[in-house]
Amino acid sequence: MIRVCLTHDVDRVRKTYQYFTKTAKAIAKGRLSRAWKMVTRGFGETSPYWGFDIVIDIENHYGVKSTFFFLEESAKVQPLSPKSYKIALGRYHVNEPRVAKMMQYLDTHGWEIGLHGSYYSYDNPELLKREKTAIEEVLGHKIIGVRQHYLNWNENTWRYQKEAGFKYDSTWGYTRDIGFKDGKVIPFQPFSNNDFREIPLTIMDSCFADTENRWERLEEIIAEIDRQDAVLVINFHTNNFDEVEFPEYKKNYIRLIETLQTKGARFMTMQETYADIVGK
Ligand SMILES: [Zn+2]
Image (cartoon, rainbow, N blue to C red; front, side, top):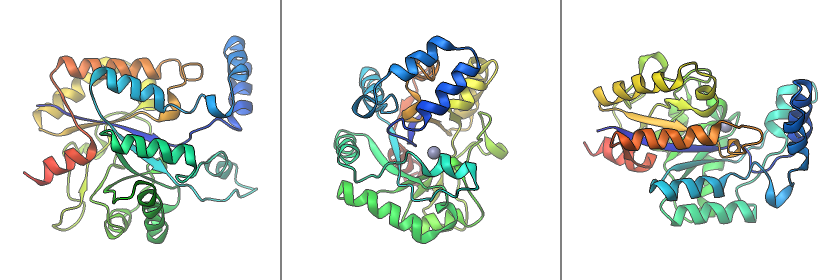
């Protein structure tokens, strides 16, 4: 039995400065019609980065449910650090009415909500706790899952996550490849004997798009998951379903689901998978 967890890191819900940076990049690459489409797409309510409706439609169509990791970023812009602009600008808050409403809708219709730990939270237990609480206040109940933004991690992260009350993490994965980081295929206990589990991330959208022979590689990965009775965890960011900016991603996501369904895979949320693993 192949178990599959579809997940979505919610890095952004609206397009802001990227109207300039991404359009400039498209022009520089000579992709003028794409650039034109980018600037003529709507702001705000019709933001190309609001991918929820597309994801919901796809998953309803295939009868599957996923896990969404929401981000409550609080990092500040540091004028001399260009990277900080990317992290701090254009962020959202989980208690914004439109975002909160979507979280509540997903939560009450069979999807799972977890925390996408903010950029610095992997090394800051207090911050991690605050962000978890912010989500729980929106939902009105506890959450058990986390994945760190940028897959940031150090040797303390799992302990901080457990202390904050999380039951599982899904940060262990490659940022530039697909497959099993350090050969870890099966969900594992990161430290000592307790109920906290790492459920490794196997395939991320951007890495998948960049992988040569991706569909052949996928077959190998699925075979290994099946052999080891592991879990195939897939992450497609909600803001990457905009087909103007990311022409392939939505198609890849659909084909992944179809491929796995023809193999009789069992689709579960991370929370259901966690219960499955720990209950064994
Ligand atoms: Zn992220």
